[in-house]
Length: 514
Image (cartoon, rainbow, N blue to C red; front, side, top):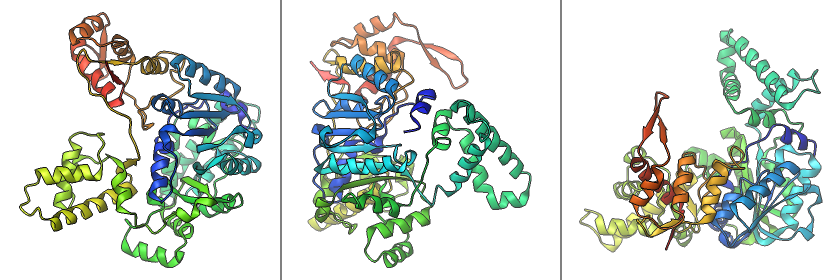
């Protein structure tokens, strides 16, 4: 693969990605009728794992699962394994390996993740990735592949071509320098386009895309726009490729790209007419309407096709089984028309990020509603409305859904502690070998940005149960500063900072009981 050296030259931060997490892939598979492996006990393979940032956090939270990452860049694999060893994880390993060299002897996996790779490799590697998703996937397994998509990538293609042209006569300069030349070139083009009213009127969105790109991280822009390979494709072309390997397309992780029931009724009718029951045609037509730029496709083996439900009508027992997490603001919930659902959701929004299921929500309504009518008929009506709201919110990404969750132990003074693996994790990624290379995340692989070196100290103090006075006395040995909105640093007392740190650890599920 030609891009091996460019990734060594301009490091791409190895972040966790929530939409690749096996717990989410498991839930999506279950929604469509599949019976995937419990993600907490699964074997997971990631192709193109870099430093391991997308699977290290998962290995931390799921000790009964096994994670294998392969990457072509020796330095990233070496450094990633060093970080894994520092944290003390034994259920994950990174292997320096060419994707082309993976075969059936490599073993079978319940989940295969290929994120940020497929569009950026030559055709023979694309073919091999799909082959791996057949040969190395367990019968009930699920594979995830992300890729740049047409028609949305038609305009970015023009920007990429400009940046490549800017470097046409400078083939020997570094990728970083190529990136700076490319950015300077497109900046000048955008400036000149803005001088002409007719061009601005016609190409305003294109100019905006250039301006947004100029603000993005250099490592992202360079690898996205200046690599030798970046070949977007239409969804239908992707499906044709996987069919050759006896694989079945399921859906996109972003359900709004696969399920049309929440769109305008006229849109639904027209898409049904165009697709005549074929879910791939339906989604391809939707991509033309939405100008889709990126897809995160889930696939399975053809042997599972008979289980799949593409009707967009999902059994109540499946919806009721999901663990749900709200992503609405209170202001958004205040606009709901259905009073009973609004009442339930506003209550749930009081404890953001706390999980619930549909039956939990119904119990709250039954125990707290001021409605006089609590007949069985009324309960069924509320339950039906609740299920409809939850499903629509899942489709629109405003409710996250999973099959299981990690236990959250609340903080109790002198009763809880933080285990060594979590202490090592934040220490290594905040002040140690992984600092700046790997993003920190929660159990859902959602990036956490508010942990700092003071939290590392608090965690070390809590290596065993302590009273709050003991913690504050120990923490007072450290000078703590908070950066104010005006940029000035203000000293904070240990007693003021401690509750904040404890809330973070509680939310992250770091506490263990004595």
